[in-house]
Length: 264
Ligand code: UP6
Figure 1 (tube, protein in one colour):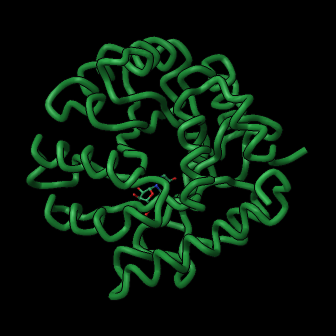
Figure 2: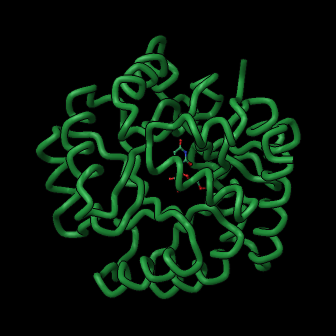
Figure 3: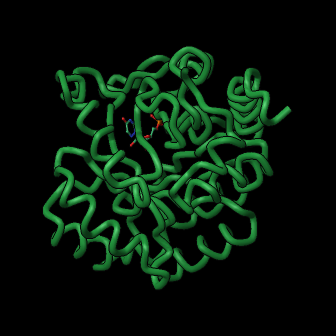
């Protein structure tokens, strides 16, 4: 089997975050995550306002925003609650458990405003299962799950070494209450409730001359069987971002749902 129908996954999942994500996907008819890689809070918030109605999630790199501050995260959380989207901080944590904890709760207070963060599988089971579970299950924090990086989209990535992706899947299976899915190129969790989020998607370009490899939505969703597409510059570098948002959202949702009898 390949992709489990969405309704089935919604009832099977052990991750409260996935319940929320799948319900949002169905309500908004969107499996589109927008990567907003701008460097000022003003630019980011303007794009969030435009994109909010069309997306399932907004993905940020907080450490790329030059004037990052608490007022910004307050506004972002208010918008996420009002417009209904998931706040995704793509921090790609990869250190000791203690350092992860300092970074999650330290200067940027990531665990207080992000619903989900990315974590490199390279740090191993205990580091992931310990600190991330502790914060994700604590209602004092907004954080409620992590995505394990099983495969990177960049040319020559070492995640392609034999056994790496399989080990990431094993870590996820050992921590199903806190790991809500993967960052991957090709589906890595057949027959399961775990969600596969895939970056490296662009309908109009193939590479950025800095190692990124893009492919289309059909390849990412239909052939490689991912669930959620992460699109960045395909939208954010366009002069008509709303048109692009509508375009990516429609193509991605059609590709995801065309064989899913549970939502027709
Ligand atoms: N991202 C990738 N590839 C990965 C993991 N993460 O591109 O394997 C992230 C990038 C960027 C976004 O950090 O924020 O997804 C892709 O944006 P783009 O479409 O503009 O390349």
